Every structure is written in C-alpha cells, then in structure tokens.
Length: 348
Ligand SMILES: *Cc1c(COP(=O)(O)O)cnc(C)c1O
Image (cartoon, helix red, strand yellow):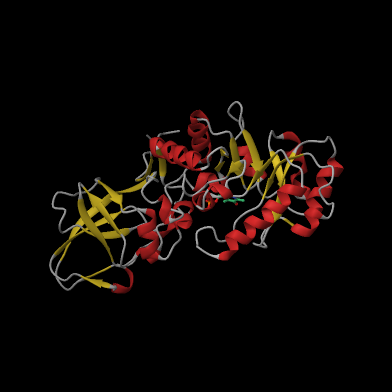
C-alpha cells in the first residue's frame, strides 16, 4: 500500500480530552467518571479516546452495540465496557465471547440473559421518563429483576440540558429504584446531568459530549476545552471578478473582485449545506467566510483578506461547537459524529 496523504485532517487534542474528563470527574465528586464511546467516540476514534482516558484513570466505558465493542478489543487492562443497547437474539454469541456487559433494556432482554445462564453480571437500564430504552419502573419494582446480579443500575435523563421539572422528577424516581433494586452501583448522569449537581452523580457518571468539547450547559462553558479541530487543504485559489457568481445555484455573487479559495471539503465529509451563510475558516489568523453553497467534495471561501493563501495550504475550519451549533442549527453531537471518514484523525 502506498501511503496517500489525505487533504482533510481532524486534529485531536489528547490534552484537552483528558482535561475535560478530569473536570467532569471532579464535578462527579465521589462518583466514578466513565466515558461514552458510542459512534466511534462521537466521531473522534473510540480506540484512541479509550486509550487516552484509560491512561488518565477512566475505568468505565460505554458503547452502543456489540460491533462497537468488538472493534475495541483487546481492551486496556482494568477497564470495564458496557453495551448500551443490551442483547438482542443475534447478539448472544458476541455477548458470551467478549469481555463486555450488556445494559439490559427490557423484560425480554432480562429473560434472554437469565436463560443464557452462567450468572454473568450485567447492567440494567430503567426508563424513568424518556420512553426510549429501559424497563418500565413498575416492571423493575415488580420483580422482573429479582435475583439478577446487577453491576450497575442505570437510568438516563431526558432534559438535563434544560432547566425543567422533568430532571427532579426523574431524580426522585431513580432514588426510589435505588432503595428497592439491589445493584453494586447506580448511575444517572450524562454530561449535562453532571452539571445539575451532586444529587445526580450517584456512584458513576457517563459523560459523552463534554469529553469531546461540547458544552452541555452554561455551567461547563469556561471549563470544557475544544478537542476536535477540522482542517481542509486548498485545491486552488481563483480570482472572481465583481458580479460573477460562485458555485451551484449561483447563490453568491462577488461584491467586488474577490480571491476565492476552493477547499477539499464538502457535505460528503459531514460539512453540511446548512453551514452556507454562516460557516467559515481561518488561515494564519485571517478569517475566510464560506461563500455560496457547499458541494459534495468542495467548498469555497472568500480569501480576499488572506493575501498569501495558495494551493496546498491548510485552512482551519471554524468549529467551536456551541457557536457553530447555534449558527447552523445542527446539534453539537451532529457536528462531531457527522465528520466523515475522509478526515484523517491525527492525535497530538
Ligand atoms: C450517549 C449517552 C450518554 C452520554 O451522553 P452525553 O449527553 O453525550 O453526555 C450517557 N448515557 C447514555 C445512556 C447514553 O446513551
């Protein structure tokens, strides 16, 4: 194989990742602080994220599926991995063979796990008001979990990023579960839940987005650092005379003679068309606003104020998550998980 350099790069800061985890761990108080690694570590690369966080002392990791769990093998020493989607019929072979636990989500899954026998430990998810995954509270309290060796009993907050009554209601329900369903540990909070305070942290927290630089609530804004920095190479710089248009649909016309940098980046890379009108990049500190529509593999930026930029130069995309989320209408989660496979992930 020839090593072909990619014209798209996602620079990833392990220092920022670890600093974010340490802050979330401190906010978690006496509770252990884990890490959600689903969707390939929110698009950053689950294996590398796990390696950096395990080295920093993180012990509890979460993926969505058994395929994601298998991709993380072999695990670093002394870590535990839980599979949030539990065990369907077709997952049982993987669940038996891999050193990971299911998070059982329904009476059917509990039954399946019991029939598989072996008394292996499992996690359990109880739904306290989201109606997504998890046993209903009345099922959990009504005997469905009797005798099960539960490592961690989980629930998940539906609205932790907002100030609303639902958080307190879910907390009260979860406390009632803790009092009546035996488990080694109890866990409720995601990133935003950690910011709700000590009542929500229990024995284990499960942050995801904040590890990766997302701001789940304003309380976290000055503590969480950006982790992912996308960059794209300039394919060519062209002069566009005043009045001519750029790109599909001729949606942007040059107000004066402009220098336009066309970058190796498009919606196929997860840089979606909704960035038109507000997206941008920088080169050596100079701003290059996005102009016209985003194409599949190409995006044009106005380089009129970035005099020296030329073919082969690297543009840094503006990718401050809360800011870009506010302007584009995409969530901070979508901004990270959408970044495509053409980005070469480079940890530093
Ligand atoms: C994704 C997920 C998390 C992490 O949520 P963030 O909002 O990214 O912090 C925690 N728990 C469960 C069950 C999840 O699915």
